[in-house]
Length: 145
Image (tube, rainbow, N blue to C red; front, side):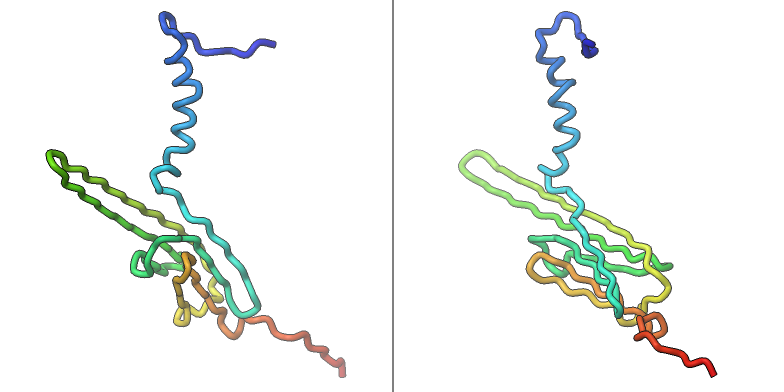
C-alpha cells in the first residue's frame, strides 16, 4: 500500500520537505534547544516523610519559589540573563530566559510547619514530613481476653 504524501504544485521538494520533516522536528525539539524544558522530578515516600527531588543544574537557591496553598505544593523558577558585547562598530546582545512551574497535590497527613528545602549540586530536595498520627508504626499483636 502506498503512503499518502503532501503535494505542493510548482515546488522542487524543498517546501515539501520543510513541512514534512523540518517543521515537525522544530516543533518537538526547539524548546529543548532554547533551554525551556521542565526539570525531571523524583518523588519518594518513606515511613516518616515524602521527598521530592528536582533536577535543576546551573541554578542558585534564590532562583526557586516554593509555595503551599490548599494542599497544592508549587515549585517554580524564573531565571533571566543578558550578555552584551560591544566591539568596533557592532553590538551583540543575547538574552536567556528560563522558567518552569511544577505543582503537586499533597496529602493531608503532611506536617506543613516542618517542610524544608535544600539546593546543592544541581538538585533541589524538598522534604515533606508526615504528622505523627500518620507515620507507620510497628506491628502489634493484640491479645484477645
